Length: 59
Image 1: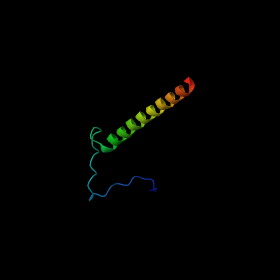
Image 2: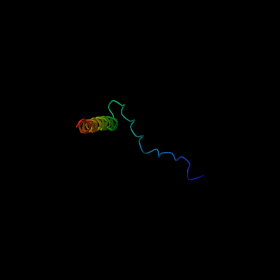
Image 3: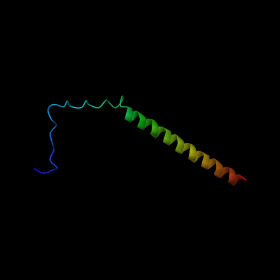
């Protein structure tokens, strides 16, 4: 048998619990919050760059 074969779990170990639903999964909640903060930061950065560009053009 090759080393890449799937090894079965010993019977004396319990099966791992199923992952929580997406609404309760803390990793997904944190990733969503991080994504939202990143998007807000990018929008604010672009808006401030446009304000600086327009203020320097207008004189």
